[in-house]
Amino acid sequence: MEGISRVTQRIATIEQRFASPSHLAKSNFAATFAAAKNQSPQPGAGVNTSSEIAQMVHAAARRHGLDPNLALAVAQAESGLSPLVVSDAGAVGVMQLMPETAKRLGVRNIYDPWDNIDGGVRYLKDMLNTFNGDVTKAIAAYNAGPAAVARYGGIPPYAETQRYVAKVLGFYGQSI
Image 1 (tube, rainbow, N blue to C red):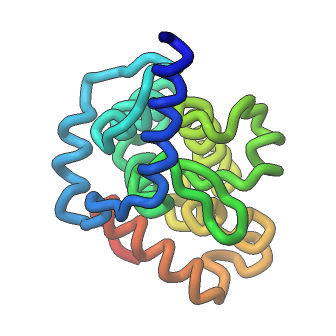
Image 2: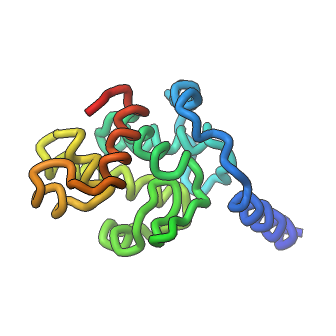
């Protein structure tokens, strides 16, 4: 019976990969964050909703001393809070970690939402530390890499990165 339950859960997870995320609109961000405050899901728990994902992002941010609003803004921009997203470039999960980055961060299972979020939050915190708390540079580095931000002394002249920074800052309630 337990095996059938696991198979059923796996099928549901696969089906979700092909569903269109309805929670990508900015208007849902504030409500999602409000629902996540003061709640901490446990690692390994089944995650199916953006509210549960937001709770995990909030908990990881608190644990690593990062502003939960910023962490949630990055997660929203990266995946729309979906643990099932895999980009064309190979970035995986809620925080869209590249496999090499995840490995360097010690993420054991890049597909596990809890591990993915924890690694992504730690990486964002590292980028903030690298750029002396400059949120804009840290966000740009999360997307384009710290070497590109250092090389250009700020947001690199890549259209994708410029759109990404504007998107994250919009979710975060700031502008460039």
